[in-house]
Length: 377
Image 1 (spheres, rainbow, N blue to C red):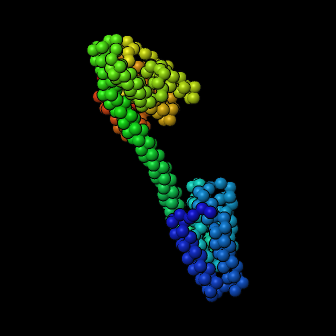
Image 2: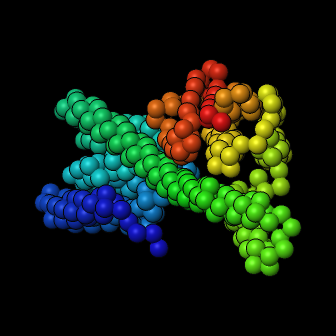
Image 3: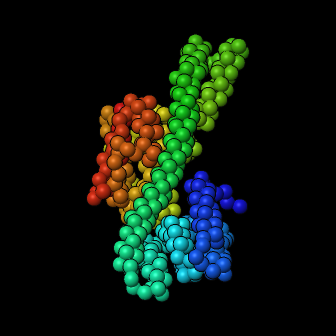
C-alpha cells in the first residue's frame, strides 16, 4: 500500500475538520425541518466518503483521467443536494473547490468552480429574486478566489514535480560521477602499476639478461645460465602483468584498431554512423597514453548515445611528431560544457591530465558537440 505524503495527510486533516464542522452546524441549525437537515448532513457525509474511497487515491497517484472527472461530478451533485436542503452547506465549497484542481486539468477545474458557485444562486431563486444580486456578487468573488487558489495549487504541483525530476536527475548524475570517479581511480592505479612494472622490473630484468650475456655470450657457466633463465621467466611474468593491467581492447589490437572496433560496435547498436579516420604515422605509444585515448573515445561515444540524439558522429585519431590527438564530433543536441560534468567530462579531463594531456570541449545547440583530447607522445 502506498504511503501517503505529508501534504496528503495535512489535506486529510483539513478535509475532516471542515466536513465535521459543517455537518454539525447543518444538522443542529434551527429554521429547517429535521428531515431536510438530515439530508444535508448525509450529503456531506457522502462527500467525505467519496473523497476517502475514490478521490484521495486518485490525488495521491496524480491521476487526472475519466475516474477523476467522474469523482468531481459526484462532488458537484452531492454539493447541490446539500445546498438545496440547507443553504449553509455552501461552506462546503472550501473543501470541494481545491479538490477540483487536484483531480482534473485546469480548464475543467475552472468550469467546475463556475458551476459550483451557480448552485447556491439557483437554490436561492426558489425564494424569489429579492437580494439575489448580493448572492451574485458573493458568487463572483468566490469564483475569482477559487480560480486564483486553484491556479496557485496547480503551479505549486507543477513546481513540485519539476523539483522531483531535478532531484532525480541530480541523483542520477551523482551516481554517474561516482561511477566515473571509481573507474578513473581504478584506471589510474592500473595504469600506474603497469608503468611502474614496465619502468622498473621489466627493464631491470632486460638489463640483467643483457649484462650476463655480454659477459658470457655462450652461457657456459651454469650459474649465469640459470640467472638468465630466471630473469627471462620473470621478464615474461612482468610483461604478462603489464598486459593484464591494460584494457582488454588493446590486448590483441593496436589503438587505431581498438577505436575502429568500438566505433563499429557503436554504429551497430545505435544505427548512428561513426566513421573513424586515422592520420599521420601510426606508432606504438606508451600503454597509459593508449589507455587514456581509448577510454576517451569510448566515453565520448557513450555520451553521443545517451545525450546527443545525433544523426551522425565522427572520430579522428591524428598522429603528429610531437603528440596524438583524438577528436569525436556529433551533430546532436549541444550543451553547456561548464555545467556538464555529469557527461563524463570530468573523468576524461582527469585522465588527460594524468598523461600531461589537454581536453577541449566545444558545444552548441545548432552545431552539436566536439570533444578533443591532445596528449604529448
